[in-house]
Amino acid sequence: MKPDDADAILEVMKEGGLVEKVASGSCYEATESGRRLASGFVSRLDEFFFSCVGSLSDQEAAVAGALMRSALLVPGGFHEGRDVLAGADESRWPPLCLLAFSTVFQVLTTTSKRATGLSFTDFRFLLELYPKKRHGCKTHRAKDMVRFLRTGRAYVTTASVRLEDQGYISRIPDENDARGVLFQLEPAGYLCVQDAIEDVWAVLVAFYGDACGGRVVLGAIKKLLVAEDAALGCMAVG
Image (cartoon, rainbow, N blue to C red; front, side, top):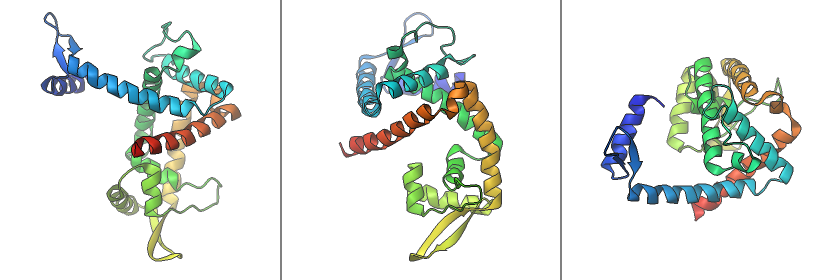
């Protein structure tokens, strides 16, 4: 986080009565209101986290913990060389997992943006249309993209126009809906995704090494993603 960004955030929280400046020095601390609010957030985070990891076997949970630990202990990272992650339980502590995810997400976002010039969500739009088979073709409706990207329909509409203007995607008629259209990648979109994937893969290898392609790792991640969808759905209804 940039110092100017931190100052701005602290100022907003100070105006909201969530933090206050310590009498001596330039440090801040949470007010009673701030601590109550944070406590509520942590409770919700714990609920979400344990809903997700509860679907994993002991072996898969250990693998997930190792992934979190690797992200935090990568050379130059926040916790490199510290003993706070000595045990497996600590590595799966929700706040540390959130920090690990945020670290990886920030690096991947920066990497994809440098490779494509697109926002991470726009890049994911293209990625959702990228076929698994080399010469395959993959299409999605607008409502599918809303669900995959977890965005509003307005974003999908404006993003699709923007990406089409850049030559990355095209619209084709939906044979099952006379008024509907499907999105698909154009050759420029394929190349854009392929170039970015090479850079993103290099980043993942830097974090996780050979574990990136491990079958147990991929299986654990898939189960976590399924559990995440279910947990978010339950919490939204609640």
